[in-house]
View 1: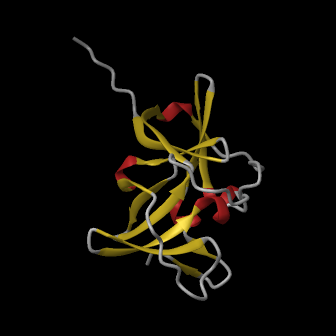
View 2: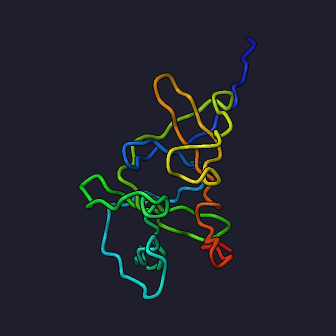
Length: 154
């Protein structure tokens, strides 16, 4: 029996402004309902503050604001995706968390020069799945704060 292995990447799919985005499942710690966020003074507008999640204080980034989208009222579908990059956990506010998918690696193309209003540095690639296009995020670049040459992750 000859079984051919197809390289796939497992991702979490979420929604922002009616567009679908994906991040690698291995970087996701959990998906939480929106909870009370304590504002931290003198931070960028897209850093909404911090939460206490099971005894751990985590910074929370609103991806809509980070990507220059309009803020909208949160709904029952709004979620916080807790990600871990190089040992640092950060929460990302998204409009909805939709799916866990296996994306064939050969369906991923390089990001075009212009992708809507989002800076293309944040996009690692575009996955084409039947009628869906998924923007694959480069999380380390999303969390960099270029103005200060700092990052939320060390």
